[in-house]
Image (cartoon, rainbow, N blue to C red; front, side):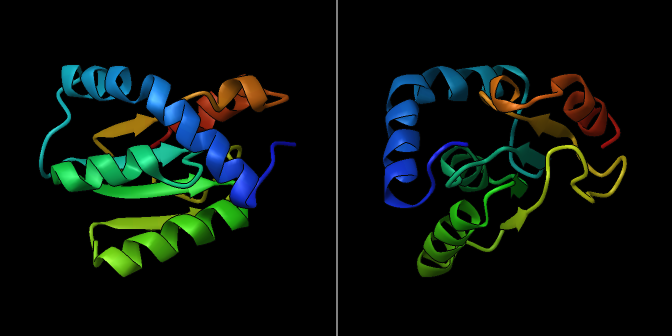
Length: 126
């Protein structure tokens, strides 16, 4: 299990500092733009989700760790960001609506899962 709380947040911020620019370029290359409906699975503390929301996408961000979701949710509430919603859920059974998204995204989640194919099948349904 990966650390949550301050230690986990620091790790996720480091990952964002290393991979953030390439992630944004990739998502823009996929056509991501204002008005898109996006699901991010394995969002951590929501750094990528927040960027997508700032771009104008409507984002539902999911993570299996409630502590990460609480940290992310607290930040967006403090900032008054309304086009992003954080949910604690399992990557294998997110409960998200089928066919409701223009983009489903995940960064580095699969390497932490016992059954990544099962998670990908779940994401494909959106």
